[in-house]
Length: 275
Image 1: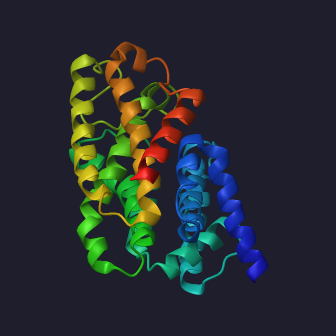
Image 2: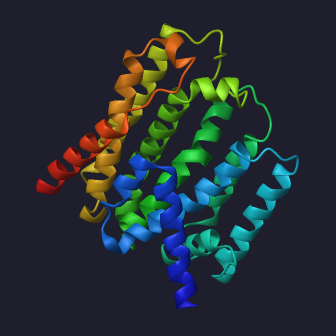
């Protein structure tokens, strides 16, 4: 079993590093004792996202339902024949990640299986399940058995997850609209997305980041440098989006090139490490 468990965590790590350059760099800055658990959380989230975003078969819902059901079985049994789920379930059991967070996550993933016109309620529901609970799962790992610290940082973790998701929505606006036929921002359509709308969204994200930053300094050192580095990257990306015309965002994905990304993340990591 030890060999299979080690393989499962290595698989989650490889998946993370393959799919996300920026998050992969940040993950390397977590302390060794928690790093594999963050990979495990990301791995589960990534596979579910693949089912709803990349797989185009008519049995999407069936596959997502089966993936979700297997996750719950594994969380109870402590074992899965799926290495990604196996790693996640062991992390969830070790750090007491509640099932309600996983339920909320899959609820949001299921919302992506069919078109929605997002009002404020649906928007907040989707962000909570797709991003805020992921931040809360990670916070469980960061805080370990310190429940008082977890309770104190819960709001900041939710705000951080929400900020990341909203930046992703803005960055991927063109692809979401043109390929996936989705617009997550309430009351916004492809045609009505303009400078005024963009500025309002940017201000909303800045408020989320401001809340998250207040909690950042209270994180244990084992996670503080990595989270700070990740937040620095997303803040830079947000500012680039703020300076990009709305008509450009509607037609292409805005990104920070890899060279700049490595310099940005590396420089911040060094600064944080010195503090």
